[in-house]
Image (cartoon, rainbow, N blue to C red; front, side, top):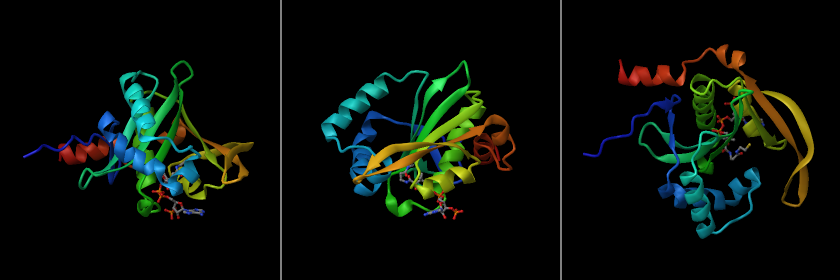
Length: 198
Ligand SMILES: CC(C)(COP(=O)(O)OP(=O)(O)OC[C@H]1O[C@@H](n2cnc3c(N)ncnc32)[C@H](O)[C@@H]1OP(=O)(O)O)[C@@H](O)C(=O)NCCC(=O)NCCS
């Protein structure tokens, strides 16, 4: 029997594991979906290009970027990606990005759950003081998910996002350590402990 991964970096229903080169075809399918492209603003690239990009990225893994796959705790199915990047250890900040790659899974709380898992890692393991992100001002679902995780809006970058023949603004949102500490919810490690040390 194949053993299951240890689901240590986790939320209530999802967990995070490192991105592997073998994930590239699945990720490519997600990012080739126009519904995902429209929200991420990514241009289409070939599978070969994605392979090259991922192999280089995974090999070059360094302390300044963490790339994760988001998987369902129930059956280990991979459903999306999240990254921490632009890690600035002196000033204690990093950026993050997230995609649930299967549009039929949007709006079910899984994104917020994954955001909680990745910020628990940023604050609880990497000792960050501030985690931030930029999102298209039109992307209300993403902003609602980040707000549920405690993020607040810090600013607006005018005409920073061009997609489908129109400009829109980018919204900067961030979460500070004490705001994360004040969130009344079980942390990633509490949830893991419940499963592994009942
Ligand atoms: C953004 C994303 C990660 C959010 O994850 P999710 O699982 O869909 O989000 P959740 O279900 O946790 O939360 C979404 C919230 O947005 C709300 N929402 C949905 N559409 C909305 C709208 N048009 N206006 C306001 N709120 C909206 C939902 O009601 C929900 O809040 P609720 O739980 O209080 O009802 C996911 O939708 C995704 O990957 N989208 C495609 C890629 C993307 O946009 N990435 C982010 C780029 S910055």
